[in-house]
Length: 249
Image (cartoon, rainbow, N blue to C red):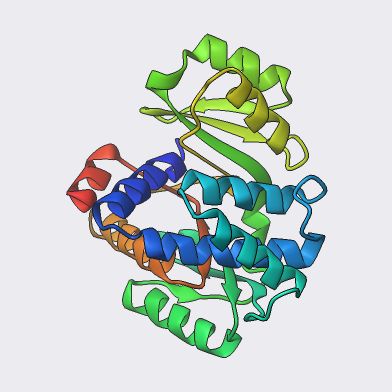
């Protein structure tokens, strides 16, 4: 099974334990501004902005912060201009990584990310070197305790989901980009709590890692996600629960 929901579980627990709300706010504020700039400030007409506002509210971001970020995106308030950039590269064991970035200084960002890759046994590659290994999909994670497989499958598939997978401790739902929002809304209407959800780049195959390469990759993922400019990291790894437990201990 994929390591995505396992990794997101680690990330959420570490964020709570390390009190990184300020860093989470920084990433969401950037996404709010870029989404508003790209599609306008009306959440009813801008699905990307609507998702960013939902994420902000889920993190209990103050309404004034959300409003200011949107107004900066639409140009009604002054603010930094962020550029959307995707970086591709390789981690330990040949794992492919696809990194989504919002940056106001491309040269600084690529230099810092190259350093993070290199010191953790990876390297940044050329544009297109791993993109072909990923497909744009909606990705939703639900803890097993929140819903039975039969109930979840009925709701997810009837609302347009493509697949439901069992990763051990969570259910992973995959959708087309067009059906993503409808599936999330259907889950909410049925009072099923979503642990994490996003539109992202899902790998089409996975590389199993263990031992030192596994630990190096988890450290690389953590440092990349901890960077202010990085919004999401997608990678085609499969790592055992034991390896993850030893990393997050």
